[in-house]
Image (cartoon, rainbow over all chains, first blue to last red; front, side, top):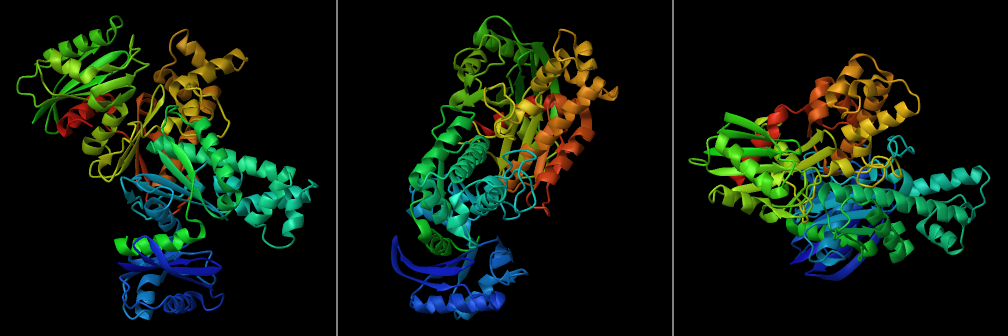
Length: 312
Length: 312
């Protein structure tokens, strides 16, 4: 069975052709900044052509940011340029591809499925996938199946409260995990501390641009105190949030990926595992917290795998 | 189908005969203080006799506090007198009842099943059961089935962290929901505040005895400031812990029961619902938080229902 998987991101579109467990081809393109959803459909269709087109392909899967509901509709996608209203990406893309079946799912869901089937969680039937990037994404596999929930929004670990009444989250809530451990939150905090006179390389390295995961890695390597402090806080918050999920659900495996986690490497994930253990109610827990294995390609691979499973 | 359900508590054993949805008989006895597990087996067997014995009964179910694992083994039951080692309650009770099949499950699990099938959650297929008593118990029903988890300890909402690094919990952890909202934690806090000179009726009403749910209800009704403060804190913590579970799992129904919640009534549960809503990530959530309907009898009814389902 040959499948095409597309990882639709806010800045780039990345696609693979997957045959069995093997990536046969890959391609990428910039996400169109102008033209909204219709331009995105054209961009994805062009990338599919670049990957060899849909002849002999059994299904196309798309992993997209934001709230994906049944029928391939993206309800909200604040990270996709010009994407202001719900849009039926699945049907529109299917039409652009001459009627090929298209399955659309949330990017964190497909990334977690990829780690389950071809990555760090191979052989497992239960998994919490945690993606530490600009925000914190989460997805749950219980008894071999993705937990979507009745509204399709299950798995939002980033908006689990780790400190009642605590730091303001990008979503407007207080004390959410994402407010302590997402890259964007760390950047806000670093710029605030810098403005208050704390000495840090983070702002110098980033300048007026985005404070990337690479900037955090460099500052940590140079022993920057603020970078260390922020990452320590992130580790504690991730430990708390993940431990709460593990305690509630009795989970045995957590995979941690995403841009920031990938960049900071296995040592960062090891520290998260320790932090989780220190917060667990069941001390004899068989829990393991391991780094994701598929990196940047996980989203597209997972999208292809989900295409084979059919619509959510 | 006629079933016997037993709620095995730290101070009393309560049993029912259930036929369809109807409680045909009920009986109770004190939990033996001396003699450990074997005395408890005798006590339960005597109560079954009082209920009419096992002739014509299709199954006996027991809801017990503590960690219940496969095969009717209770691993830990700190609330049962003299119960220090794992004990195979299921097989021992079955033998004492002349070979009748016996199913043992956790008391919170069976209480949640009772609310699902015959109580406040009738017709639902997904449910978070929260029991606010001496501690905080929790159980999850997902896709129509109790979530037990690989180690059989799923649902421990009481030990979900609501405040990273916060108040010490009875289990030794920090910032757990139970440390802010369990009756025992409220009592500890009230006695500490009293010792520090805060004026409160709670300690006068309880004297040297346990500070019961009734004591809290009385002090609240009299406008006691400390009682109000403690219950306010409990409501906020319950809001945070339940909201985290709802956000993670995309749940639509939460039933709140247990001694303290039953005593404080629907207004208390209404306040918890408001607190949960204020912390939810998905503002359009269809979530409802409702009071349990079966009160004290829920455990025994649920145990009977679980007996019909067979062993976990």
